[in-house]
Image 1 (cartoon, rainbow, N blue to C red):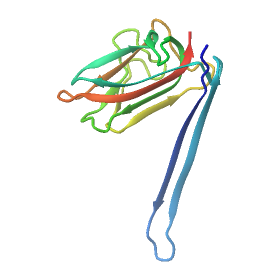
Image 2 (tube, rainbow, N blue to C red; image 1 turned 180 degrees about the vertical axis):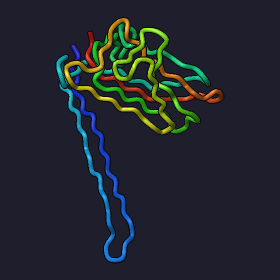
Image 3 (cartoon, rainbow, N blue to C red; image 1 turned 60 degrees about the vertical axis):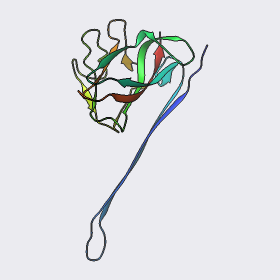
Image 4 (cartoon, rainbow, N blue to C red; image 1 turned 60 degrees about the horizontal axis):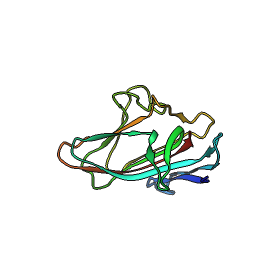
Length: 167
């Protein structure tokens, strides 16, 4: 049986300054968020991951089946019950956004309102994390994650990482 541990870290550091006569007023944001997952199926735990770099032809889309179809890098078929972390990064060479969400049927929507979609611009990314006991639920009837290329003329590539609890 495989064992999984994960650390997802996000750091934001900004410094906004303005010229003034005697001193330079400034505002600084220094925020780091860490999410650590141990091996298992409870809160703050995961036991499976899946990742890939994918390319969609112009105007193409795909629906990733998160329950019983994806095969991980170790050759195991995954039936996610809960997704703890979703990371999707649009390639910097893309000429248009990719759109996430909105599968025609059996849509995986626990992370967005029904029928909702999110566009990720070139070089942009989406990171969602739900480490509570519920996570983002997946079932055999709510398991399709749609990814669409919004460019009518050029292909688009993206990286995707899913971390969660296997059935």
